[in-house]
Image (cartoon, rainbow, N blue to C red):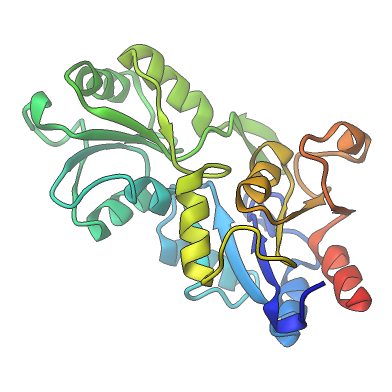
Length: 268
């Protein structure tokens, strides 16, 4: 392994740090251990509804220092728009904030009256206000030349009470209605991987670094995109009896983040 201070941990949130609003036992202690060992920690989530500061505050509510250590799929999606563009946001406040920070204009399709041909892009992210009218307005813009950007293609969203429809389900509806293919910005795709590398000051394939998550299809493939190790925790959507069929195959498996971090530090 690389030297202690050379290691970066790219951590998912849902299924690793918390399930919905319930912290996973030991996750705060795991971050304390990594900070004490002077590892780099970056929280990377496909959940786009929260602003960056809201995500930081939610982590801080779990006892985790998070300021400046969060990257969201909303930020990745906004990186695909240009300053000055007009963007329909079919999603939450996290996307609106990120689009504004990019120098573009976020538009609510139900509140803003903008000529449809002047819409440059539609960004779809997880939100509970998805409706037929939002779907129709987004599709109309896509029929007139706007490009479709999806924060992520996760089909479901884990909660302590089971799986809810995720943004991949919402994006599928918009893509079918709009007759276009989406550009996906979040895990495991290149836009969010590039933000991670930029934030950490690393290059693809830097040895010793690890992506930790509960879902091979997003977290594992992000690790592959970055050419980092993949650590699978069983505290989210993947169960122990599914490990042997995981693709990509995890480099390390643990019941939760705390136990993974303890094992890594004890073997360093």
